[in-house]
Structures are given as C-alpha cells and as structure tokens.
Length: 109
Image (cartoon, rainbow, N blue to C red; front, side, top):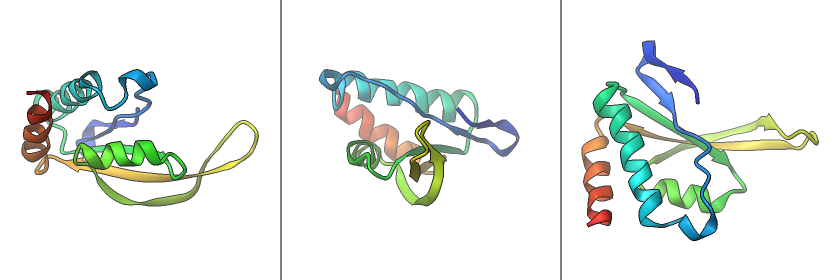
C-alpha cells in the first residue's frame, strides 16, 4: 500500500481471506512470502501494518506473526458514512525479520 523506498519502508495491507482460511497455513505462507520479498528482495527495513482498533482478530493475528504494536492514530480514517476509524499501527523491522521468519517457518513445518 504505502511504499516509500527512499525510506526503506512499506505497508502490507488489505489481506483479505475467507474465515475458513484465516489462521490457516495459507495465511501463514502468504505472510512469509510477502515479508520475505520485502526484507530479502527489496531490502526494506520496516514493514508496517495498520488495522482498525475495533478489529481485534486482525490485531491478534498481527501480534501472533511477530508484529509489534506501536500506537493508535485516533480518527485517522473515515468510512463513507462518516464514521471515524481509529487505526492501530504495527511494524516488523529488519532486525526482527530473522526471528519472525523462523517462527513463521516453524508454523509451516
């Protein structure tokens, strides 16, 4: 989503899976491939994720893959109906990647 190569940063967002594939091998493998491409192919140093504060499932999923919660941006986005959305930011840094990668690979084995 938000790609800032000059700052070695990008955002992975809008990963949509049906409920039957959430918390599945497919989701784990997808994250491993996306993060591997970011850190190993592109040389990214920071991968950002954001999710609505109300989306507890996504927040738990991001923490489960090793992303660190960094803070909440209040009224950061608005829905088409005008409802304010508080967004929680998570990140994985390049220095975190070996640990996160090992954990994702362990889950797949």
